[in-house]
Structure formats: structure tokens, C-alpha cells
Amino acid sequence: MARRRTKSRTHLAGRKASGPIQASSAHVSMGRDPKSMVIRIGAGEVGPSVSQLAKDVRSMMEPGTASRLKERKSNRLRDYVTMAGPLGVSHLLLFSRSESGNTNLRVAVTPRGPTLHFRIEKYSLCKDVQKAAKHPKGGAKEFLSPPLLVMNNFTTPISENNSQPAVPKHLEQLTTSIFQSLFPPISPQTTPLTSIRRVLLLNREITSSKDEEGEYVLNLRHYAITTKPTGLSRGIRRLNAAEQMLASREKRGKGLPNLGKLEDVADYLLDPAAATGYASTSESEVETDAEVEVLENGTRKILNAKQREAMRNAPESIDGSTRSNVEKRAVRLIELGPRMRLRMTKVEEGLCNGKIIWHEYLHKTKEEVKKLDKVWEERRAEKERRKKEQKDNVERKRRERKGSDKATEKEVGEDEMDEDLNDWDSEDIDSDGANEDMEVDQVGRGRLEVPKG
Image (tube, rainbow, N blue to C red; front, side, top):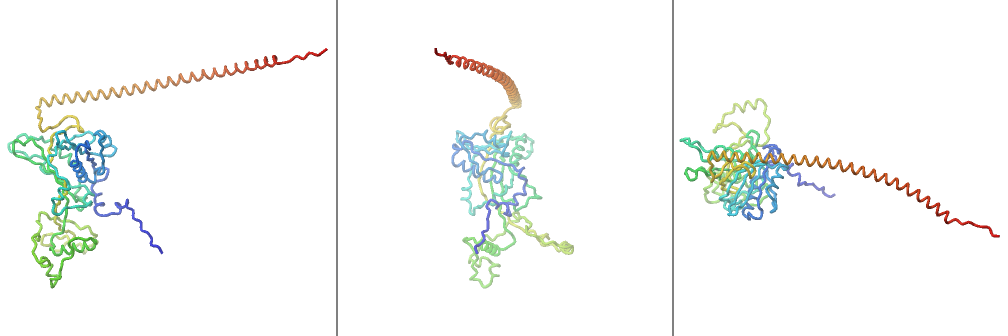
């Protein structure tokens, strides 16, 4: 008898999978998650390095970004802005290159702004970061959930002499809110700790020199979070790793340790260096600052009242904790890339246009700012007047078109009625004339027979 085939639906794998995919749904509902588009303005002009940098930023922004977006040379910014509304895109990250060769990044909030302009002074691609790392981290599980955003030094500390800061406070608050809105918020009470697999670090450089007081420089780093249990010796960790490797049937360079030279397995557990013949310097314990307590995800047995009372009265452990389902794990960060050093040049009120809120090189006095505000108010009023005038013209043309259509319909109806009457009279006249002609013809053609004789 033939063996029955087991169906495997690849497009349903996301529903049946467990772990990170289910954990990623615990952040926020899909309707409220921010979505972004990473775009190259002038796709054929930015060069291969900037194109690869845009791809790396897309992978960093996953899963809430268009990772398979393909730009064309003919696409303009208004094309993306037009499609941002129907697709639910909340942020645009625009990479471009100026005529002088500078690489720029614009972070815009749709649909009405504001827009942050950055000049990318230095950057490193993901492939360069992984080549420099001793043990690079790879895999797609880290990108199933959004990263944890960590921002440092975004607000300038208050100086002792209460002097006015070079970067205004409202600009710092605006920049903080824009970067926070790039990713969905995380609730510490509901979000499982295992779903946080990446960290996006934004560090602002605060300089004390007077020449660099007006600068706003950000350093961007992207890390993967790895954890391993602490409190276990190196020998037990190697045995656990070898057991997992055998269970997963993966072939790696390191397997089970060679215990042929030892008399007892206890010798290996007490001194793991005895199996290799040399001591290792990596036996040092992890610092206590890098340790976290994680609740076990396994099923727990339901206890009755006596068992719960016994657990409450149980003596505390050395570290003061009595919870048996708490596991201590050491946290380690592995850089994924990309790296960027961003220098803010200006901030615009609209989406890549509008009034300039702040500029790094141009500084205005209060009177000049008032004049510019007055000019922008006049432009805004003129724009509203033109919109209203255009709307009135459209309505007027629509009414005229309706009136002309009605007049033409009336004229067409009268012409058709006259044509019907003319057709009816001509038919009667033609029929009468035809009968008379026929009678005359018959009379003309008749013969008179005269008798002979």
C-alpha cells in the first residue's frame, strides 16, 4: 500500500510557527505599528555603496518597513508621498547624494512633516562590520521583531551658569519624539523578554569646546542580543551545547569533548582544561552587571494551598531569591551593522519643504525671524486664496457645463421633433404623387379598339 503524502503548506508556516513569531505579535496591534520606507532619491546616481547602505537600513528597520522596495530613476518624491497614505506609511528615510559628493539622509514624517536633514559623515556597511567581528552573528530570527531603541544624551544637561544652549530645547524634544515614533512602543508588563532580540543605539556626542557647541551629531549602532545561562561551569555548558548539536543534527567543528585521557567524568566537570591539555583564559565569570533574571517559559504545575504555603515558608537562597522558575542569564551584544555618524544640518517644518525651524550654519536674530514668519504667513494666505479661487473656478465650470448640456439636450429634442414632422409630410406627399402618376400612366398606355367596317 502506498504511503500517504503529508502536505506541507509553506504559506501557512507563519501561523504554525512558535516562538519569535508569536512573541512579535505581543508588541502592538498591526494597525498602530509605524511603517517606514527607505528610499534612494536618484537611484542611479547615489552609487553602489549608498545603495547597499539603504538595504542595510531596511534590514535594520524590519519588520515594519518595505524590505523589497525597488526604485526607478523616473520616480520622484511626490510619487512616494502620494502612495504613503494608502499604504499606511508613517515615515520616509531618504538617501541622496549632492553634487559635491556628500551623502545625505532625510527623516520625514508623513504627510505634513517635519523633516530632519542629516549629513552622513562616516558609515560602515553590515558586511564590513561582520568581517571585522571575531564571531559574527547571522540569521533571520532576530529580524522578526522590531529592535529596542536606546537613546543617550539627547537632552543637553543644564549648565551651572544657566547660559542659553546652542541647540534649542524644542529641537531636542522634536528629534527625540521623531526617533521614538519610528518603532512601536514596548510595554514592560506585556512584552515577553525573549521577543527583544536587537538593540538600536543612538548616542549624541556632546562636546565642551566652543567651536563645536552648535553641532548636533548622532552615532548609530545596531546590535543583536545573545544570552546564555550563568552559574554553570564551562564543562557543563560544553556538554549542553554538544547535546543540542546532536539533537539538531548539525555538523560543526566542535562536538563532544574527548574524555579518553580521563579516568572519571568528574575530572572533566571539576577541571574542563584537563580534556584539552591546556588551560583557557575564557573561564572568567561574567560581570554581575551583565546578568539578568528571566522567567522560564515552560508549563508550571498547579499547586494546592499546602504547597503554596510551603513555598512561602521556604528558606531563602544565598542571593535572597526564592523563585524556582527564575533563571539567571548573561547578556552579550554582537554588532550587526550598519554604523553611521549623522550630523544634523537643518530642520524643516513641512515634508522636505516649508519654513526652516533650525539651521546649523545660518543663525537669525529675533527681528529676522519675525520677518520670515510674516513672509511665510503671507505665502500661506496666498496659497489658501489660490486654492479657494481654483475651487470656485472648478465649481463655476461645472455649473456652466451642466447648463450647456441641458441647452444642447433641449435643442437636440426640438430638431428631432421637426425632422419627424418633415418625414411624415414628405411620405404622404410622395405617396399621393405616386398614385396620380400611376393612373395617368395607365390611361396613356390604354388602347381604344375601333370595330372594322
